[in-house]
Image 1 (cartoon, rainbow, N blue to C red):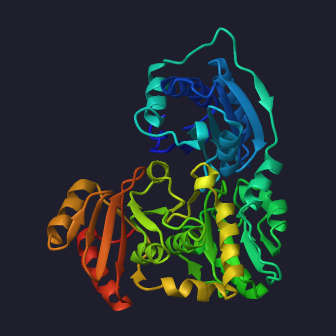
Image 2 (cartoon, helix red, strand yellow):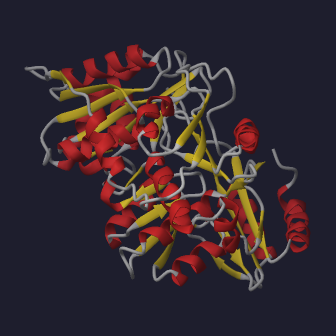
Length: 451
């Protein structure tokens, strides 16, 4: 059981770390999380699964645990994580559980939890409580087990997504390559076909062994096939989904990756047309260009620490129109403040139709600075190394919102600890490529060689 209870979900190797016996116990323990919430939205839980071969048996065990504790289950079958969120929010249930290990390799599986209105489960009364209750054996046994019913939310979800589509009359037909990475984005095929685009499909066969490449669009090597297909097909845009289709990455018509922070800014600018003065939440790894662009388009940028629970909480607090993270999560107010990759695709299409320019030209105004990718360093004493950085760069403006950030007029960096691995993660941005290389060299002297 060690190490599988993460900051935001449960995830581990199957069956050595996460198996049916443990999934059933976690299902029972989830009763305590809902009990802490007071069962204000009843006792029905939406459950769904991804395409991994072990997801169905894990789901069956989870359902045994949930119903054994007296919770009712609404099984929506094979679904993406955003579809699970949508079902929770639109059907008014007490919460949801998605069986998935997202972008992790085939030998992993996991559980993603939400509360009513698709609110994240986190903190002391979330994943930590699940771990404590499972470890202590405090697992409820109901006198009357809960009931299991099934539902199909596919059509309702399609209608919801299409409500965001704004294709001007007479707009050109866009050619779009979509790489589903053999993951759950595959089931979006009918939805994507209805967007009024020429869809070019890449790896649209459900296969939890991920035979073509890892289902993690954050790694540039996983975008190579997409970029090549975009160039080969003369496409206007390329899209890559992760394993459970809650994240997306984009490439322009030349196959050049569009940073998810820049995509956040573009989508924010589009949504702010209807919500002038609205808040937009972005994570602190994002380019300075993001806050500048949001301000230029009449919005109020809000910088937040990394992690969906923090982004969503700040969005709810400020009634923000939109939020985005460098990892490719995009959060929409009318989507229960939850992340939804396919809605981000729709908004990028809207922008290309409105601008009637190549994607590279649309992104160009945001390419204002030179920025590194997020880089990992294996460090045993993470806090001590961050403190050393703060002392070394003490002449800069320092904050500790998430790790240590140091800001100068012409450059900045953030170093933050991983929640799940013995890594420090570095992002650096400067006014030029030359300045970026110079500052990276100085930081590597302290952090060591990247992993």
